[in-house]
Length: 221
Ligand code: HMH
Image 1 (cartoon, rainbow, N blue to C red):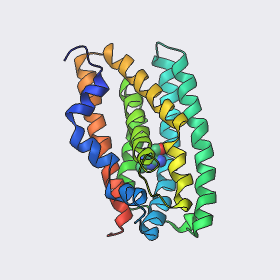
Image 2: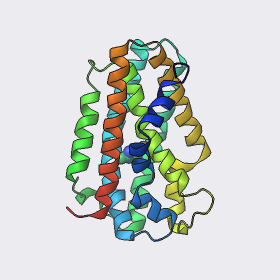
Image 3: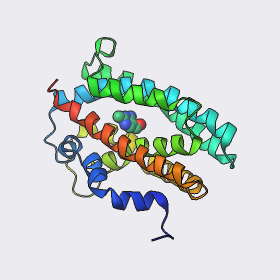
Image 4: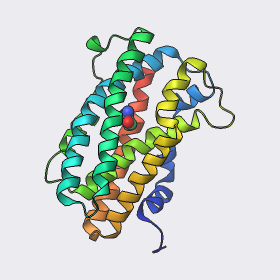
């Protein structure tokens, strides 16, 4: 349907992949309380490494917004996201020490390295703002959706994991993700068809990277 917003349309078309990313066995095990704590610690160490790489990507997005955006408020939204990432880095350090996870000796796994390398490729000035902001939305939205589900009705999330789920599952983060989605939709509506298809392919790739990222918690490699 032509009147439907682009991201909503994609999420319908790629619903199976989106559900695989946002209802992964790892986050479902948090929600039902059966989570293996060593899997959680593996995730924690790997995600700290990811977030460190996510910051320069966010910074590159800020620069693109400043140069290419048609709406000044985009910069403020992205800057707010960067501020939240600053807080997140501190949180990871505190949380890691709480769980006895040694961040300095955590080795990035293959799926993480590949995802971080992909993020770095998106910092290139050749990557258009519309593509980059759509990627940013997708990355944040997977965590928001995954962790909000761990707090929603019927969840049995262990007390010691609730703070983690709150970080990404809280209403403020949900609102922030909807704002990013609105920015992406607004840009996509004004974009040429080739940009729209590139952005769609980007969302699919990110969903695939996110599934591989959750898979690392199994610790098979
Ligand atoms: C792998 N994806 C991954 N880590 C995160 N922290 C987010 C998304 C959201 O910030």
